[in-house]
Image (tube, rainbow, N blue to C red; front, side):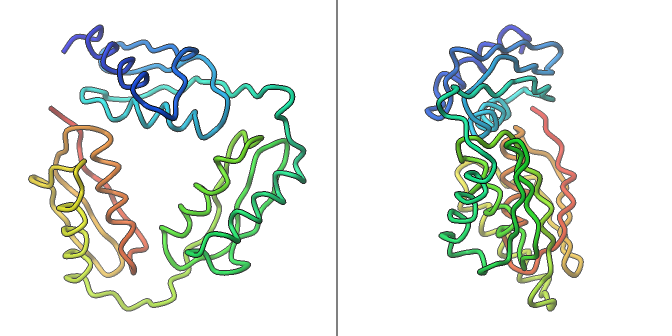
Length: 219
């Protein structure tokens, strides 16, 4: 596939993605390395642009140079962002009460605290990054497992079942090794999106505290 063909596929994917306004996004490709430029209206949309690009087969790496530009009437004070962030995290039933602390400085949110599972850490970040006025998120939440006992065979089986359920993953060629609370992934997948999906499946299993994702992306 040529760089020109790959660029067109990425442009088509951005146009197809409903959460992205592609009118102000620029795409360039050189030897499979994609550079994204332009501007979007929110931090969540910036992440959506990158996710859409990574879905495309043939993308080897991404340079993210997209700016976030908020309309002046939608700018929010840090205290307002912090209050809304606390409220939206409190609504999330997967997160224990008072487990996450929030600091906001010039629109940049820093999350701290302790949770038992990686999916809870990720849920807290997803909850706040979509708020208007948020320009970025630093996730410093620590993992403190509530149940240290892990059955490696059970963990491996749960990951394999999750991969079989996923329409976005071809599980052939993926090798899974569980060492206590650590999962090691080896093998090859077709796209960056598949690689991320496999890693997320491993992180989502209760008891997993570390994931080493050695999956390579190739045709």
